[in-house]
Image (tube, rainbow, N blue to C red; front, top):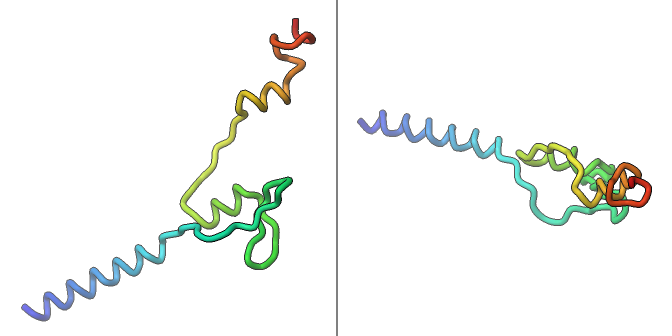
Length: 85
């Protein structure tokens, strides 16, 4: 019975170690460019924010355009501007 309990404990320990190895979390300071928002990695290379976060966490990105940026980028097509009337 002690042998079976020891085998179960070893199995659970192995599963826990594997789960911990797969966990990716970001912590600490991220050196970020104030202009383009790229992030500098520990090797000194600059990476797109989305790529860096994707590679260092479980997060994935989808992209869209918020209403404020849509107005700035597509003002000529907007009915709210003089050019669009």
